[in-house]
Length: 125
Image 1: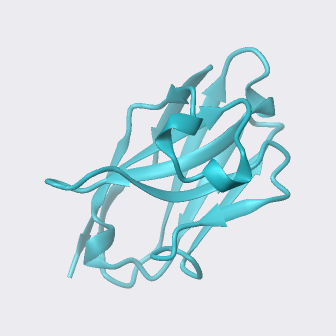
Image 2: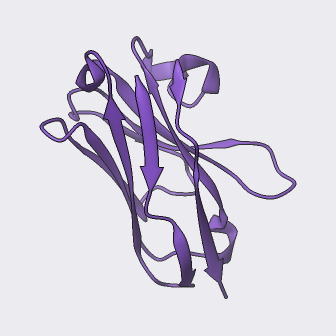
């Protein structure tokens, strides 16, 4: 499975932005997809995730209520809608895919088998 994240850019605090993660490869739509981010000088952190069906979504406390993850399996694409962006949301955002993700492990990077290249989101205050 190959993943291509896109949609990053420079926005102002309070703005919205939608990231896309396009997946290709055999059975790509059968994978759960997570979003992670890494800010300069910080460790990578979990942002949000969705199951392969899209019926279940998971969020970090810091993004719950502001970010929404969704997927369109017909297009093999997962989206991360980010609203009310804050300067602390500035980071490189990565999408990752996992075949068998346990709900209690959805925020762990080790649960994912494939990673995209990342897209930079910069939020100016």
